[in-house]
Amino acid sequence: MDNLGLFALAWVALLAWLYLALFHWKFWRSDLFLPAVTGAVKKWPSVVAIIPARNEEKILGQTLKSVADQDYPGAFRVIVVNDSSIDNTARVAKKVKGKASVEILDAKPLEEGWAGKLWAMNSGVEGAGKKAKADYIWFTDADICHEPDVLRGLVAAAVLDNRTMVSQMVKLHCESFWEQALVPAFIFFFQLLYPFGAINSDKSKRAGAAGGCILIEQATLAKIGGLGAIKDALIDDCALAGTVKGAGGRIWLGFGLKSRSIRPHTFSDFWATVVRTAFTQLQYSWVLLVAAILGLVLIFLVPLFLFVMGLVGGNPVLSVVGGSGWMVCIVLYWPTLRLYRLDAAYGILLPFVGILYMLMTIDSALRHLGGTGGRWKERSYDF
Image (cartoon, rainbow, N blue to C red; front, side, top):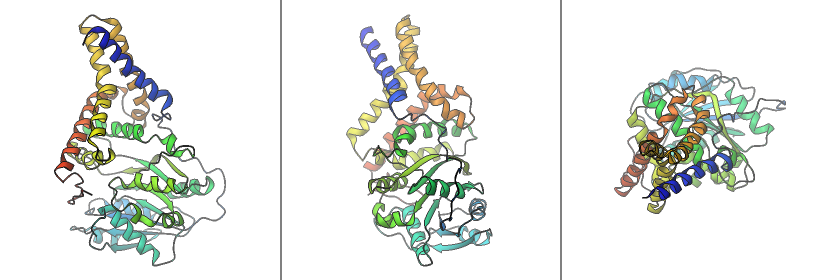
């Protein structure tokens, strides 16, 4: 490719980042939090928390305690769904005592056509319905600890802002090198795909949620046909959000610094997480896979490559244009790094992390081709 072609490519990459920065719903923002409760909730609705748990004996005691000890003024109870665990998950759950009552249910054997986590969640919903039905259901994961006022904030936001579903992206465990390199990038890429501003806007059809912390109206869940409406969804949180918004519900997604995952992740854990859903996100389309790869190369690799190429080849104009695209990328990434209190220098790693996520996506497609793409917690799904 001649210098003119390289220069044009550099401009395409720069313009792509400028478009994302200015016209993509301010996806890069990391300051979207639940609003402070400014009005009084006249009558606090009843809530039931449902925690699906599969082989979680090491951490469930701590996380379940944080849920059961919520400082919530209304009626509140907790259901832990033991999802065919082969460890002491149920025994650990039974020992937890808190302000709210805790009930342990054993999920029935997984039915064909259901994703495992959704099956466990559905078992919890059915179990909750055998008693007095709650006004809201709070789905939260077994690895997440919540500060005592989290539920109060979720409910207040739902009631006072008339939201049928409220979700928070919890603070992920981010201490090791690989966590610091991959966690903020995961959040950044998620926001690229699911801009929070679009999700929260009634004018946009875009929908998304973070499955670790979802509050939803019981009536809305019943209206859409329950979790059976999305029973085979591997990206269950976003599928639920899309179904709710498609039915006329108002949803909200933001960050929750008072909720945090205590589960550490290795590099292989990240790889497995992305591989499980990446090709699903692309609707199992090889055309979209090729488009995604080309897009990742264009916005993450091309600017850095052309910046270096311009320096080495003595072409300052090429270096400036390529470097400008790279700098816009780093500037937009900075709010996410700041959210995790990481140095801005981690932004330099983003192109290389983009390569890793691209390889994970390719691996996801190849595994789906082999019938093992949706493997998670000793289960495989290839719907």
